[in-house]
Structures are given as structure tokens and as C-alpha cells.
Length: 253
Image: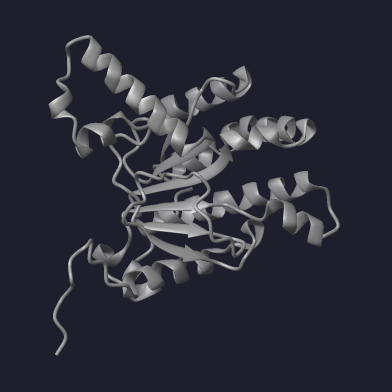
């Protein structure tokens, strides 16, 4: 059963226009969480999936426009084979198990990343979740799976080069909007707020073009311990910042 939307002014003391439109999160710390609990790393990933459900639901109820979660990078294929295989199984299971949550919260599911290399089972469940939720009008949930920002930019350049070669695009017409439209995130607003958990301070090849003017918030909590209250604090911190986009800002008295 759907829960009623949250009032940001009541919960956060903020007006709706003070919220970030698009939040991107680098979900870090699953392995460390498991190690601290003397558990296998895979149990950290399982616990992290539970956190995903809570944060997605919370963002949907707050009225956030888009949420992009950095789930599996192109570099993560270097991890031990058994861990990678478990993660792929977990993604397929998650996509099935969370469909009711996605539909109940009017969430539109999207994938950003390369399809090549992902198992057929993951692709099938991902495509089905995209199909089922494509008519939803609330939060856009973007799962960055098999994602690398440099790969994304390379793919965009290749696509634009093909358009030029075919005579459909003049090189002099290429500007920022054309490039943005060729990226995996085409149609989405750029992230306003980038959150990284586990006190890590790197962007790790994540949305390099899109986060040019994002506010960055680093949280000490490991991803499995990240809560709705942690997200609220990140949003309130975002609202306190002055975003100048290269300007000098408002004059002070």
C-alpha cells in the first residue's frame, strides 16, 4: 500500500524548491561493513540492497526528481569471480523483488551503463522492470550498472562521430547540450548533490561530465548503515550552500 508523500517543510524545514532535483550516490562500504561484523563480503552486499530499498522509497516520498546509484563499475569486474557472480545474481533478484516497491511508489526505473558483459538474466530482469515502470511519473531511479564515466564519454563521442560521418550532424553544431544528449543520462537533469558514503573522497569515474557543478557531501556511515536521517542531513547541508555556478554570488552587507 502506498505511503503518503512526505512534506519536506515539516520533515526537513525546507521548501520543495530547496531540495536537490537529482541526487547521485556512490554507495561505498559494503565490504568493510561485513568485515567489521566478521561476515563474508557478500552479506555486506545483501545488507546494502536493503539500504537501497529504504533510500529509494524515502527519495520518492520526498518528491526528489531523480536518484542515480553507483552500483557496479566497469572496474569492478576485477573483483574475485565468486563475488562478481554473487553480485550479478543479487541484481537479478533485486530487480524482481523490488518491482512492487517501484510500482507502489510511482518510480520509473532506468539503467545507465554498458549492456555488453552483463549476464542475460540481469538484462532480462532489468528490461522487464524498465518496461513495467516506464509509465510511472515519480522518482526516476537510475541504476549505474556496468558503468564507467570515461566509457560513457567514449560511447557518446563514437555515436556523435557516426552522426557526423552519416551527414546528419555538422561538427560546428556540437555543443554541451548535444554532448549531454548523447550520454547515458540523456533527458535527466545533472545531479545537484553527490553523496559518497564510508568517508571516501573520490569521484571514482562516476558521472564526470554531469557532476561539474554538483555539491559533494561525504558521509562517515558505511552504505549498509546509511539511513533516511543521513540522507536528510545531506539534503539540509545542500540547502545551506550557496551555489554560484562561476558567478561571484549575492553581495554581502
